[in-house]
Length: 178
Image (cartoon, rainbow, N blue to C red; front, top):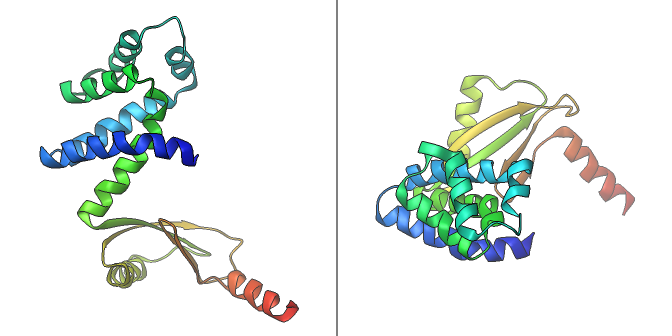
């Protein structure tokens, strides 16, 4: 996976810088999300990897499937990727682009897993505290996991805060066994 990210990084950076400079970050994020989802389809992926198709044909096929969701600049970006045989990198390019966009906008998506549903007030308070700690605007997404005994598990990018009772019990058990 690291190799795909390494290959995707210059394309994601170029797309991000173009979108930022032309003040079209949201539009490009939507277009890249669309084209990455389409390129991830197994049937289309097989067609895009067909060696009998030229790069132009592959780019046209992908652009045609996406239809009006892509503007001329995004279609040109797809043509460049096809010419360099990098269409398979579209999901990684979108992921990196989204990270660059979040860093630019100082936002972060946070997943909160709890044993029970969090009330709106508790979720808002948690978002405020996390926003202050992470120095970013926080978008909280909550899920429930009945396997947790209590507490919460928070994931924000590569940061994981395990405040669950199960996590605390596992830490206690590890400490007692060592």
